[in-house]
Amino acid sequence: MLSSGPTKVSLFILILATFLTSTGHTQSLGNLLKALQEASSSDTVGAIKSLADTLQGHVPPGIQAENAEGKVVLYRTAWCGYCKKAAVYMRNNNIPFVERDIETNGAYKAEYKSLGGYGAVPFLVFGQKTMHGFSETAFVKNYADFQVALAAPQPTTAGHGPLSTKGQPDGAQAGQTMMGKIPGVKVYAQPYKSAEKLLLLGKTDEVVYMGEERDGMYRVTTQKGEGWVDKLLLKKP
Image (tube, rainbow, N blue to C red; front, side, top):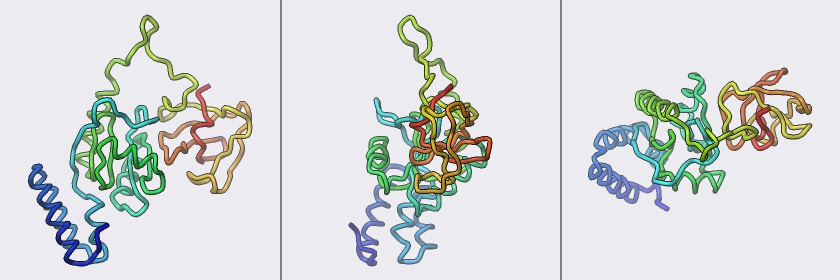
């Protein structure tokens, strides 16, 4: 682990700058240096890890983000300011997305690395395309390409037509009506199970999925307002 002392941090900056230059990311280098100039010495490592500029990439062949069909996946940390900006932008524009904290969940961190994450956040996955960092311009382009890919013909089973996602929450789209798999499914005020419980879903109660997922919880609208539900306990009617 690198110390925050001037010598080691400077060495790390030099190594990172050499990498960005050699790979053609000169614009990223400029934004990185600008961020470092504006950061205090105690924030230097954070400035390196939280990217304002964007680096484009692709998911390695045969790899995909789990349980994220039709959604953008945002790999984040709690301290990352650009992660919060990305989430707010998607929320304000009604873009279905999934948030996964790579510091609190080992499985999400492993998935992040397998998809091409190299230590910086935010890291966004648009199907088979990836983006380190966040800017609205780059996001709009990647999301438009993602929508084109989603509109392409779906895979079929031999002689049986398109694959069905009935009863599977992972195929849910924003606005989809869902219901609990069992009576008494809890609806929480926040996306974690220690949060205040708003209500229990009855056997026939339906909710509307709002297109947002955070750490395995779906944001839904019920007859009594919005809340969060464990996605594994929901199904399509």
